[in-house]
Each structure stands twice: as C-alpha cells, then as structure tokens.
Image 1 (cartoon, one colour):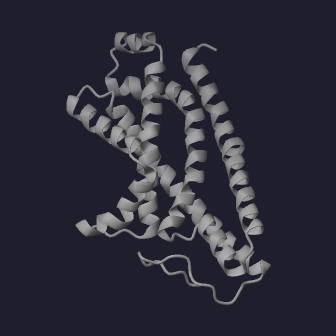
Image 2 (cartoon, one colour; image 1 turned 180 degrees about the vertical axis):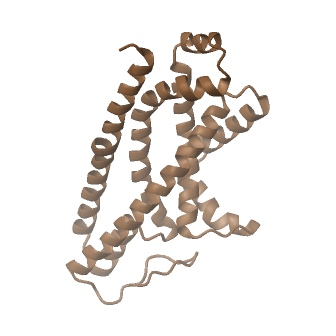
Image 3 (spheres, rainbow, N blue to C red; image 1 turned 60 degrees about the horizontal axis):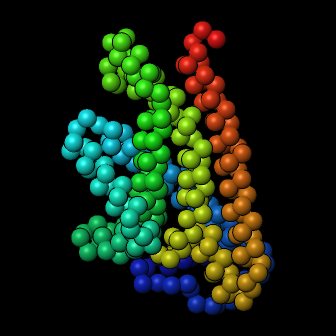
Length: 239
C-alpha cells in the first residue's frame, strides 16, 4: 500500500476497509519503521552525548561553550517543535529532509543532549584518586580517559542510557505527525479505514511494551553485568 509522504499530507482517506489480517500487516510494517527509527536515532544520540558530554569537560573554553549551548538548547525546547523545524523549516534554508531523516535528526539530537549530562556526570563520579594515580604514572589526558576513566564511567552510564533508549523508543511515536509510517501512524491508518479503535492500539501498546522489555532485559542488563566485571578488574588488578 502506497503512503503519501508529501509535507502537507495527512492520513489517507478511507478507501476499501482492510480486514483484520491486512490491518495487522500494516502494523507490522510500522514496527519495522519504528525499529529502524529507534536504532538510527539512538546511534546519533550516543555520538552526540559523548561529544557534548566530554566537550563540557574539555580544557578549551570554546569547546565547553559550544557543548553547553547545544545541551541547553535541545533540553530547553520542545521535541515537537524541533521535529517540525527539521521537517518544515529547514527546507526554507535549502535543507530538505525526508520524514525519516527529519525524525532521526530531531530525536537523536534531543536525546543526545540529555545523554551528554549522563556522560559528564559519570566521568566526574570517578574517584579523583584514579586521575591522580594516572598523572603519577605520567599518562596523557587521552590515555587516562581511554584506559582508566571511561571504562569505569561506562558502567555508571549504562543504566541511564538504557532508560534513555526506552524513552527514545516511546518518543518515536511523535514521528507519525510528519507522516512517517511508524507503529502509531499505521494504527491510526487502520483505525481510520476500519472504524476499529481498541484492536489496533491494543496491538501497538503490547508491541511497545515488548520492545521496551527486550531493550531492558536482553541488551542493557547483560551489558551492565559485563561492564561491572570489567570495572572491578580495573579497580582491583590483582584479583
């Protein structure tokens, strides 16, 4: 089924009402879009979080200022407005983005701003004795960050990063506002064409819950255990 991606489009008008099977297949197509959007946005958010978070710890005042400006701007403005800027306003400046690209940009930069504070806080939470020991060993700033500070900080970052990943997944529903055929868009499409409300949105509700549980128990928890073991080895090298 072809879906119009025009910037002024809304949900397609009702044509022939699909059956239950057709509606379920539409929702499954929306699931694929939601997963792709979540993965791409998470990658962008992770990169932005580390760049901005470490940027706020930079000895350069210019880098700290740029990182702080990014964080404060995206945390201080609405994601809804940021999404509409990416899709409707940027083309006025010659930057035309499709629905997927605009959604990835808005979601990734927005969540990256929140993740940056997680990165900064986790690095600062490492005991100052660790840094002093690295300096005593004549390690460069890069060496102590790469080999000592970050491996321990990652264990602290992962739980809040997991929460941000789940938040990212749930926030992808906002992309339906710019006609991206994700789960929410497809559920609304099935509702418009069949008149059913409970079934499509019940299915979407269960899918979101299942995906959130998958992220938490199959991805985040195993990495937490692995990083915790690695951090213990750093702290107690003789163990």
